[in-house]
Length: 142
Image (cartoon, rainbow, N blue to C red; front, side, top):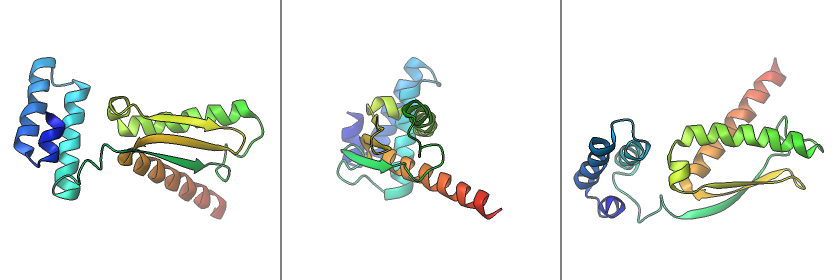
């Protein structure tokens, strides 16, 4: 019902549903908070949803071979560094990671990660990788 309200641009109904979850399960409830965050994102960015675009899962491959800590032949090091990267992005995305059942699988043979997720997670991955690249360029410049 909540997603239908978003799709139909019935933001007041979506907000009432989200607040109902928070009233019933407490203000700190992850899913209620995720619902409000998602509603705010719709209002702020799009002035309304684009036909379920937030919910469509796509698969993207991210080449990590040029990032420090990932260009290694040691699979354990690669997987450890990837786990740290995924956890940072998972924290940024919050409870929606579990809500949308995001999957991130390493491919050590070509030093990449395959991510199956809605678009907002791919945007978080791209943003995080761009920040890593920028930080590395600053280190090299200094």
